[in-house]
Length: 237
Image 1 (tube, rainbow, N blue to C red):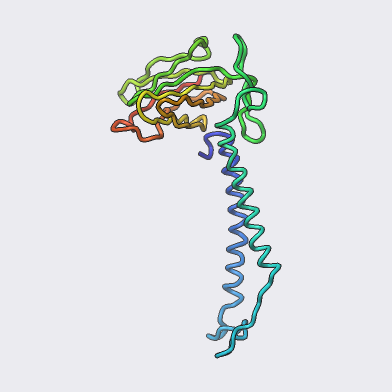
Image 2 (cartoon, rainbow, N blue to C red):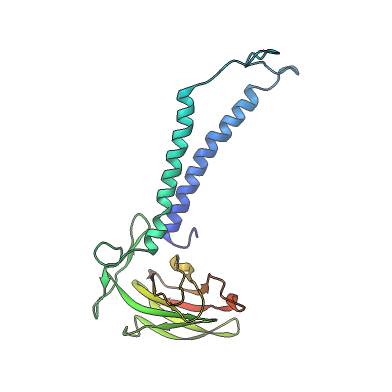
């Protein structure tokens, strides 16, 4: 997902930096030992003073063992913690404690933006709904004006597909429902995806931060035509 959204991009860069850091230490140590303990004139140095029939010298170093155990553990905990960021964004709650505030009133704009941590923040959000069935998406803009949200049909690779038009700078909260089996709308350019289960209403944030056009996919196998269950999403300025 690196490069798709600022949040995933920041997470990707963190993992690359830590990978380079750990790799430099690991391979640096490996190369040092490879050359330091190599044989000289065909004979390997007996650095451990090994003798036949005698148990080898004990080079136990408690401080080194603790360091070698604790530091990687702290790093794993830290990487796990920062990896929760995308889940935190996907499952952000509504209201003052969430990233997108409360539902917009008539004439109010989300004015969304990306903060330093890669999160999309909004003054408020607009409500809409998405209904899934084999093998089709149905969008409902509810009471939103056409400049904020509109639906139509588009031709994608010679086939007619649903079209969802959104407005850049606005954030939407879609209520997901399914008529038959489990589906999963995947908005690649928003960095958002969520399973929708029959009989259960699920919410999904759609932060339209910039003008873009992309295909919305179904990321959960749902039958014979699963691969063709797509829709066109267009974000206009």
